[in-house]
Image 1 (cartoon, rainbow, N blue to C red):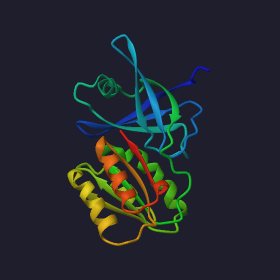
Image 2 (image 1 turned 45 degrees about the vertical axis):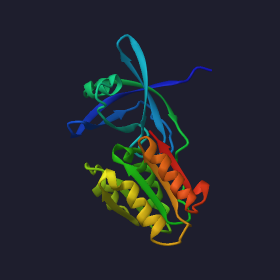
Image 3 (image 1 turned 90 degrees about the vertical axis):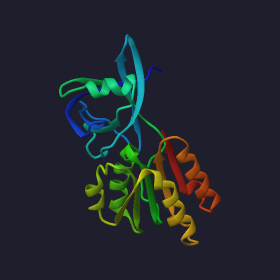
Image 4 (image 1 turned 120 degrees about the horizontal axis):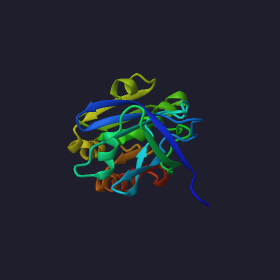
Length: 218
């Protein structure tokens, strides 16, 4: 069965810095999604149609208004095309996709670990979790550009800690493996490359339950 395609129009472009921006889309009729899911953007580049996945950085409660957070990849034709878009331009996509999701807050302390723009899927997760949290929610955010920091820090029960990206792995070890013997926490980890695999392995090897360590590797 063919995959259903959707489209949106760029309502606004937000420049966080020269290499990082948000695209705010209006999608006629909206789309239903779960916090953490992504869209597969269909990009007409060089006579081809490139497919590039981007996590939805906005909340499901506004299904007709979506936000995509992206950084420019040097020489990347996909991000180069997206950086060329302006208000009024059309963006086609399929989705939502993905199983790195949070529908209900776990009944335990929950730690969200995000590396740079991997804060995108974590943002709606934290908004969802904060509504029903009975235990602390912690965000360990490895970044030089703290996008959404003030917004997320204002949520009830959410504690936000910023660390340099190159210290993120060491801080996870220090805070959640070496500091105590509590292994009841749940984790949602999102980042780039082998870092995510190393953190997943370290947390599970330290005694955290396999299903309590959810992750998305970009």
